[in-house]
Length: 389
Ligand code: SOE
Image 1: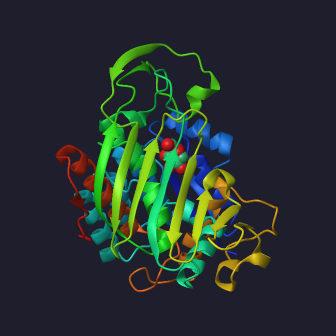
Image 2 (image 1 turned 45 degrees about the vertical axis):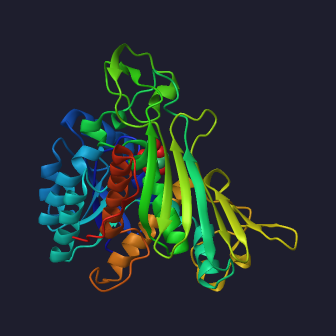
Image 3 (image 1 turned 135 degrees about the vertical axis):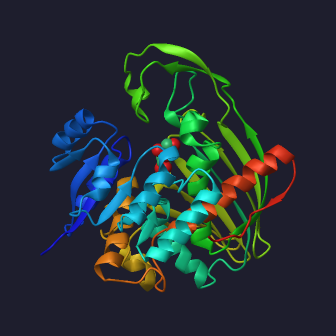
């Protein structure tokens, strides 16, 4: 069987997670990687068992053996590489944020559509099977009308002043950090599960650690926690460690979420609660196999992820019996499975619904992030623009 061929650009924290997920599919093969220089690309390719290594992503884009490109580079490179990949006729799966501004992301949506390529953004949290189950329950009106949506996304990997990563620097990570990095995931997940859109925001932001000790040499995401020995210099930080955002949804529902990367003990706690006219639901990514369902007139329940307990329409998203829990890497595998099945089945991205986040979702996410920054600057409610590229 001929395999779909892939090139991965960028192999820091997330690139290897893409590679591992792709390898679990069986019908897709990673044939090349590109890094910022040849020596490091060759070293990584050797370690990961990948045949070709490029020291310049443009060489990878010109490789006729590659059909699909994954953009796993730092944020400031997303737009340029996504654009060049589309122009080179490759299908593309990009890391979030899709670009640095909504002007750029709108251009990418329009370009991708004009070339008819398949495009995806790695908003992986919506790929938890139990969230497909919750979305189906909501579609069946099990929760009733959802009035309130609240939650948070908390991490602690930037808690200390000596914690440093390229995401802290606006020229590499973009003007927003915690909101763009993890608030974007929270909003995508909520919108996917409820089917509602965020239309207006009121935000408060804070840089809890205004001066950090920046290592003289670059540190990979999460690597500082491994106790690497490093020399530091002081750097003024302008991107936010924390944000709280009031939300208005398109059907009148209200909500609020907080994000923080300085919350000791919270490793990757994306959680939310939905309060509907019949029931409530609560979910926490760190205990992803459990869905709490709240009642007023009977004992509350906890649904464990199990295909036998899922609604028919959610069953195909879960691949193991109950108790054989799926986690974060599995969501990336599900993302790849949906993306590559779409491609393998020859579906038309212009007319057929994708069951993964596309560039349109990536662009919508950019518009929400920009509205949040704008709201904080102005100290008022700001509407999320509706432009689609
Ligand atoms: C760092 O904050 C990060 O790795 C994000 O960039 C990811 O998207 C998130 O899934 C986990 O945390």
